[in-house]
Image (cartoon, rainbow, N blue to C red; front, top):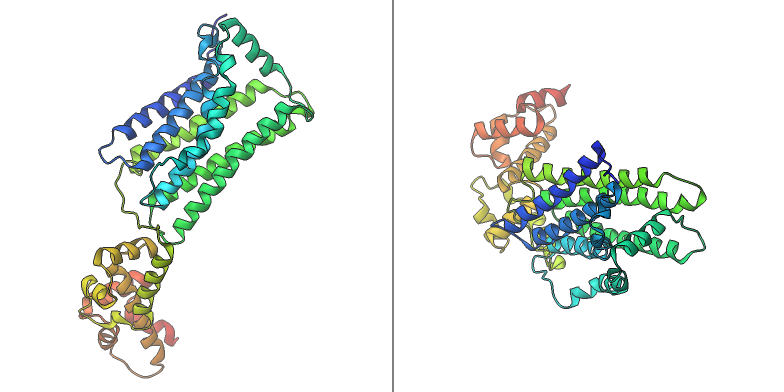
Length: 364
């Protein structure tokens, strides 16, 4: 039988090869982290899955029947890998330990359950897979609920992964890798939901399984394309980004409050000679740690954050002046600026107006 060739199959094959290619790049990266290693393993599993499904779709599998069944147990490794990736971001000291291997028990069980299938000859494997593909699931069959449990299994891990990432985002607004991975999981969730919806309604009537199967593979190929875009265009995966340590969230919250108190209550920004070093000394925290919190929590540099507080202070002084005449340069000095140029430049940066234009605006 001649292999079926179509543009869709070519795109799917390209996606599968690209998944393996990206995985190799991540594994060979000089700044390889645990997150990148786990992500590479996930891409390898997805690549193998796409290859096997494509071989079945194009009927090339008839020439290599012993490749059948390789991806099925491997699919049970995807949920824990996704979750471990979220943990690797969320906890700087996270490591793969003996306890984490408990998450791979479903994979081990499925591998053991499939051992009899692997001992079959090629013809028996093909016939068995054909029977499975042609069989319409029933709401009363065990296979239906077993497959449904897999959707719930992977859905639970995706939910826990997104929850971990949301926990991170509540303390770190400026983390491209976290925001990107969260977006990727949300897209994957939509793909999973559509696949689940089809599976649930399948017993109700005759549906074109080949079309659904191709659509499912194509969707995964496009997700891999999105990963490739981020890899090449923005270097999100290959760059080495600084990540705050969220291992002790309570301490981090206290330190964030200490920074906010120094800004909003003590108003340290009014000191026109304030620097990151002096600010850190005042609140008794390491300079690098303070810079990291400000960068991730406020999505800002220290200098820009201080200038933002100073501009807000200047606005309050201008608004409180009423009809009284004021010198704007004095407002700048009172707000913590030490020269007119930086005051006017910062005011325009945050308000898109000069101080004099802002004064005229509030007096109208």
